[in-house]
Length: 373
Image (cartoon, rainbow, N blue to C red; front, side, top):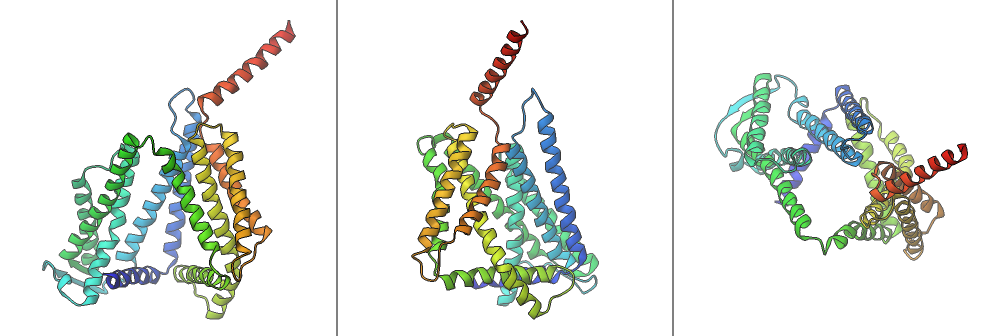
């Protein structure tokens, strides 16, 4: 099973990277610009809804992120199944049930690839239904939608000569979409049970992201210097190779090595900032759920993040090949401040905060009236 998964994922990545033209870049840019405009529209609409029930800005951002990821997946699916193949390059019809599962290891891996490709299809369907309807939707809807989408792809491949029309592909694609739906449905059930019966353990569950992030941060910092450097270099190398594969033109090996060497420190700093930005967000969420005011939550979250950052650098002094650096603490704090500022501005005020501001406003009005008299 592990070998089949490895072969299937490798085939997906190879096919994806083979799709190398400017249309891909244009499509991605158009997608993200559209989503950006959608988020701006929703935020402006939210701000104009005075005196009425408003949609939480964080929910709007979550919707925008979910839609953007679903759009990226849709483009990815089309690129893998259609755009990566020349019209008329291959065509055929295979309606024999189970033919690919009885073939060689390569054919079985290809069947497994068809299953994997449609798992995100079911995941995004269930998540979008969860966001807009409050539940994951009917299971037969995702089966029907997955089957129709797969049928449309197979028919296009057959008519344009981009691939074989295979009955197994439709069945496996549908099974993959249903598997993705089941994953989200299980999470939805767990979430609802938690909301209904998880009152006593809710603080511990809300603190769980902080504990996981602390374990990840200190786990990374416990790696010896050579291992940590090799891991970051490997990630940077993969980023450069993928960028070279999907962007127009090509880079020589010498140019790639130069870019990797220059980009590696930047990737490490961005990783530092991202880690502590997420940690600061976890602190903010936990403290906000305790009913504290936004300003106090912002300060406490930032202080907690700074303490962890300093402790992490001190910890690295005792790790072979590593050393603590004050500038890394600065990058950690910068990432935390950026995310906390965004979350602070988008987090709705509590009734206590609004009442306090209203009392201040009333006092100012009273003083002005008294001064006139």
